[in-house]
Image 1: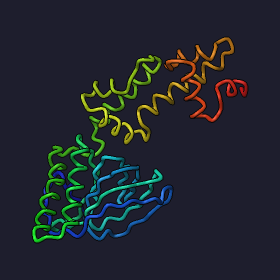
Image 2 (image 1 turned 60 degrees about the horizontal axis):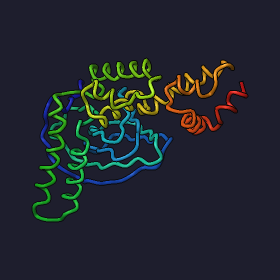
Image 3 (image 1 turned 30 degrees about the vertical axis):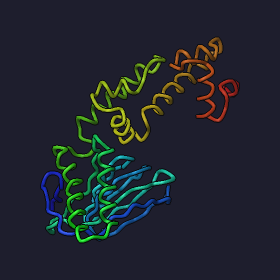
Length: 263
């Protein structure tokens, strides 16, 4: 039976069970979850985690993402970072049709975080109006997903744009004035949003990737004994040999001179 995509077929929220802010430090371990007891919206406050579902789905969430976990889904969590913090709301959608888990990356992550904090505050406030407040805020969160115009996680055009930005970076890394914010402007998105999309797609931040490309080129140039370390650094996009040496040692645990002598 085909599973319902909640952003394409709006559903009614029947019941709210709980809202909790928590963290999980079981990084680099597989954490299985079988037959999930409810639907859930999860906002990632910090860290990164990969969810692999029994139906073949797999995606990695990062800070600022909204994760929807479907009722009765089976999956395994693999936490990449030392600290994985999130706010989650367990609830029930109306209807028994199987639903598809998904991840959404809102353009305004601060608004999404504010809504989840508002939901958490309403849940912790015991008053006759509490339930209606929970429902209203939860519908606001669901509304953010519906307003994404049915954009699925890692949609093709976004993925293609991020790939073109990566290629542009690889062609222009040697320019010492090259900045990641320029790539975001090319895509007409905020720098924060671009960084998040890039990391989701390649598992590394654009700044880290730029540094890795520059270091790789510098290592190749260092094979030529007639090139000074300063020449290797400048031709690889580093603003100075001093900065190059600091970055090189931080990334490789050896100085450029020692690395060169090992070859």
